[in-house]
Amino acid sequence: MEVLSLMDPFTGMFKCDYCGGELVDNTVLEMEMQARKELTRFTLQSKVILTLLKKTDDITLPPPTPFSEVP
Image (cartoon, rainbow, N blue to C red):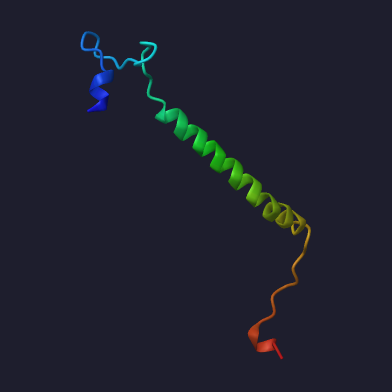
């Protein structure tokens, strides 16, 4: 019901009670900002793991030993 008081019946647009300016839906902007925050947090949290994995790039593993030869 509060939304109806913000709507201008002549233009069909939502207007601010204080300044009379047109109200703009900013939920998309809020979602983008939240996604960026989550990506930043993920990047920071995974940095340690990626650094450790890069250290293993030069490691050469020995050939596998068949179970029949395991003592």
